[in-house]
Image (cartoon, rainbow, N blue to C red; front, side, top):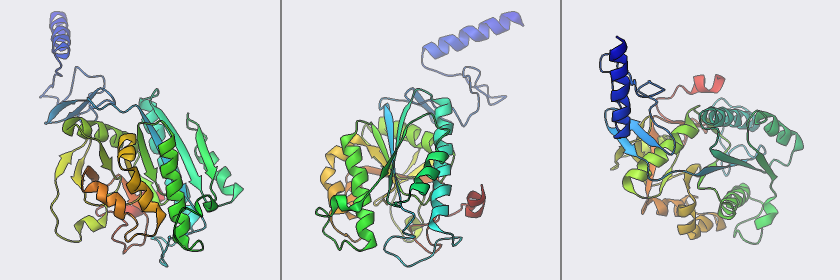
Length: 328
C-alpha cells in the first residue's frame, strides 16, 4: 500500500509537469488538484478546466478589475412610468443589489486575496444618510470604496438634451462612469446599475470566463451579467460557448451593465461618448455597434437578475426563482 501511494504521487507529479491532470473515473475526483470538485477546477491567471472539454491555457490574464456602480434613489425607473416587481421603494432595490455585489466580491477575494479590485460608486441621491448606508454595506470588504456624490451639472454643456428630464441624469452619470474608467489604469471594467441582484459567483465567473474566452479567440470581449428576456422574443442566430461554469451565448446588443477591457474602451471611445451625448433610441445604440464588430456574451442561466417591471423585455431572466433571490 505504501509503495502504491509513492508511485501515485510520482505519476501525479510527472503528469502535472507535462501539463496534465489525473481524473479518478471511479470516484470522479481529481487527486492531482487541491480542490477536487469537478465544477471548480479553474484558477484565475493560470488555467481554465471544463469537463469534458479539457484545459484552456490562459494567455489573456486579467490584471485588475474596476467596478463602477451607478446609484440613484430618487428615480424609480429612468424615463418610464412603470412599477418594478414587488413594488418596493427604489432604495430597497439598491440595498439588495449592493449587498449581493458585496457578497460576490467577498467570495472572490476569499479565494484570490492578491487580486486587485477597485470599487467606485457614482451616486446621484444627494443624501448623506444613503451614502452612509452604502459605506456600512461594504465595510467588511478588504478594499477601498470610492463614493462620488455626483452632480449632473458637471456635463450640462456636454449632453445635448433637456436638462430637466430624468434621462439627462441617467446619461450624465453613465458618462461619468465611462470617464472614470478612461482615466484609471484597471485592466477590466465592470459597469453596473443599481437594480440587479447578483449571484455569489458573479465576479469569479465573469473574470474566469473573460480569461477563458478571450484566450481562446485571442480577442478582447464584452460580457453582460444577465440572461435578458429580449434574447428569446424573436428568432435570431447565436453561438454558444463554454464559460468557466456555464454556457454563454453571443449577443448583438447590450444594456448598460456590462464588463469589458480598457483596450475596448480606448478602441471604441467615440462610441462610449456618443452613447451619452444625446438621447439615442435605444440608449445603447452606439454600444450595440461595438457588438457588431466584437464578441459580446451573456450567461445561460443568468448570473444577475434585472429587477425591472415584470413585463419588461430587458428585465427578469427566464427560469430564475426571482422571489427566492429577493428574500435571500
